Length: 53
Image (cartoon, rainbow, N blue to C red; front, side, top):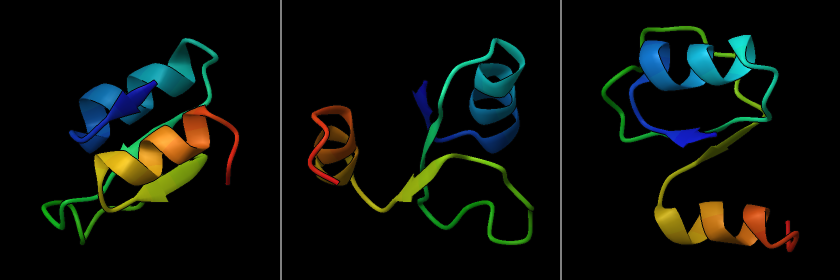
């Protein structure tokens, strides 16, 4: 699961048993997260999805 809204996407992905990638755009800096990966842009997410990171 790749998402940027912390609660809706990342928590939902975890609840479904999926690995998660959080696209951190700085909007949720005061929130804790449990994403498997945190990236700053879509290219970094693609690297993870392709197993390069």
